[in-house]
Each structure stands twice: as C-alpha cells, then as structure tokens.
Image (cartoon, rainbow over all chains, first blue to last red; front, top):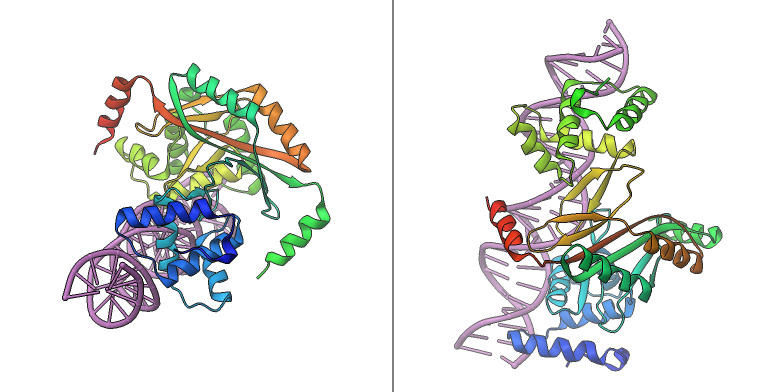
Length: 161
Length: 161
DNA sequence: ATGGCTGCAAAGTGTTTGCAGCGAT
DNA sequence: ATCGCTGCAAACACTTTGCAGCCAT
C-alpha cells in the first residue's frame, strides 16, 4: 500500500493505483511513493520540473527522469491527466473522475481556477452530434486577467526566481 | 505588396501584414511571400513541418528556420494563431478576426472541423465574471470519433507515410 | 550602403531512453 | 534470484539562434 495517514481522501486514487501496478506487474518503490505523495499534496496543476523542485525541497534526491516516468505511469493508469498549454511544457493534474472541470487562467500571474458548467457540456454534445461525431472528451480553457490586480501582482512577484 | 491575384479574399490579411511590416521596419522578401502564399492556400491548421513540405513540394528551397521565423512574425502581427495540442508540435491557423471558431477533432483520423457557438461564448463570459476575471480569449476543443467510419479510415490510410 | 533576411548548423527546450547497478517481490 | 526500478547521460523532437553573406529599400 502506498497510502499513508497524510492521504486520507485519496482512497480511490490509491486503490486504483495499487490495482494498476498489480495488474501490470509493476512495483511499489520508495521514490515512486515519495513522488506521488508530494504530487497529491501539491494538489494542483504542476509540470514535471515544478514537481521535481518540490521533491528536492523536501530533501529527496530523485532524478527528473523518474519524475517523468512516474507521471507517465499515473497517466497511463488514468489517474492523472496531462495537458499542454501554449508554452512548451506539459502540466499534470489529478484525474478525479467525479470532478471533471475546465480552466480559467490568468495569463499574467498564471493562476488557474477550475470550474464546471453543465450547460456548456450539453451544448458540446449537441455540436458533436450536428457534425457527425461521437464526443469522447473535451477541453475548455478561458484566458483572461485577474480583476484583483493587487493579488495578481503579488503572485507574479513570487514567481520571479 | 505581397498580395497577388491568387489571394483575393485575403485583402484584410495583406493590409494588416503590410501595415505591420511597415510599422516595424521589416521587409518584403521572396521567401516570405512564398511561405505566406502557400500557407494561405493550405487554408488549414498546419504545423511548421507540414508547411515546409508543401513549400518544397512546390519547388521552393526555403529553410525550416525561415518557415518558423515567418510563422512567428505572423503570430506577432496577430495574423495567425499558434496552438499546441497534446503532441509536441504547434499548429498554426489564420486568425481571421471575424471568424473565431473552436475545434472538433477526430482523434483517429485527425480531421478537424471548425465551429462556432454563440451560446457557449455567452456562458464563458458569465463564468469569467463569476470568478473575478476579465476574459480575453478562450479555447475549446472537442475530441471524438467520426461516425462515418469509412471516410475516417480512408483519411487514416492516406496519412501513412 | 545600410540593415533586415536567409540558410546552415549549432544551441536550446522539454521529454524519453539505454545502460549498468540497485532493490522489491 | 528474478525482473522491475533508478540515476545518469545520451538521445530525441521541436523550435530558436548565431553567423556570414544576400538582398530589399
């Protein structure tokens, strides 16, 4: 079991992960455990580099390649989703099946808000049908600027490395 | 003037391009002209590599770097939009201001249909407002499978190089 | 003639992979 | 004792850049 007392609320995640590892004949390992724990703790949209930093910040010596391999494993298992926005890098997020959501992104401070809108989903189905397609998934990103410019500015500042 | 008799209907495009080049002190050149003509003729979502191939297929010897530079120039001028889907490469398309559209994509044959839906746009504005954001742009991609499996299969076949 | 443009190859990104040794079962 | 996993460095795919010469203005 990879789970720990810190991860209450992610039971479904660990159940499916364990099942996947088992089914594929893969192993539980310490680096894997560490990466997953920290990924879940971040509970956000992270790219491989950011996750790698977080892992190192907590004192673990894990290679970037392992971060990628773990993230890909989770993606293959259907537990995380990988998305690519305009810049080069991919962003990963937990694929909670009960919580499909779209994104509202501030292009200044990179803040990302998740939302869900049933009416839009219905309209999407209608559109797909109209064009003779069977809808499988979708992706909706709204880009804009925070109206709260003070908080937005603070976030920009905190990102300057 | 970059325009030619082949490009009737893109008057707005060339007007804005000429204005941009002028404003920035940039030049009209033969490679640039060629790339733009062929890009407009393709009138589709192309990546740099595809455009490069089309250019070479028509007998022009233009480097890939120049394709990228021209595409970036057009992007900076606001005349084309650059999008990145799941795979690595970016796709470029004409940014016709009167024709904003979203995409319906078959994940089997890569066919891409453009559509527009006013109701969805209105809902998006409402969402942004609700979360304290000023909406600038958005991006909506619907992924699915063609119901016409024959045509879909034919397209897949024609792509195998 | 100036200064932007081009091709080429080299340098950069972000991501994946081959390998030899380590570690989980 | 298997066979997967890990770190490292090399390999990759896509994109950008430095340079020396070319060409539009």
